[in-house]
Image (cartoon, rainbow, N blue to C red):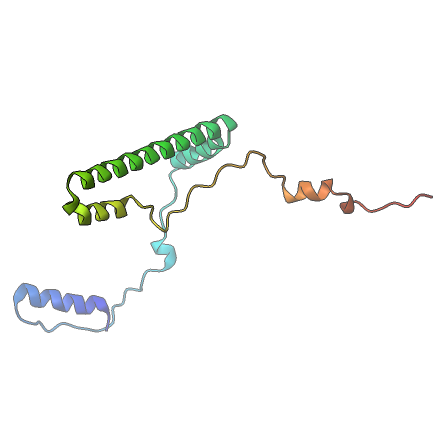
Amino acid sequence: MKIRNILTFAACVSLIGSPLTISLAEDSTPAPTKAAVAKPSVDPEKAKWDAARKKANEDPDVKAAMDAAHTAQEAAHTAQVDANKKMLDKVLEIDPTLAPMVEKEEEKLKPHPTMAPRPKPDPKPKASPKAKKAASPAASPATSPG
């Protein structure tokens, strides 16, 4: 019995108040295939945008600006956390009976265990394995004099 038939039966019961005699025979319509369920084709403008954005993000000036923005965001976040900690310390100083609430707020300030810090950009770009292989002396056949 297909789920659709069961849901149809349940819908009829809920709308009319009594069960109807319905056919639970197999549908003649085939189940949708993965190709039929696949996402529609990408918008050409979106594809152009994505390609241009990817290329722009490879530019050293853009990378530097993005890294500077990220560093500024991290500094702002750190400053906000420090300010919140000082505020919570002051709340405890003013009213020690609020310790349970302060502890809950301090838990919120801790970094989430699944969040890893963003890796720092490598100052020296790594050479590709092909470039390393070509540069190594072992890669070229040794020639004997003679």
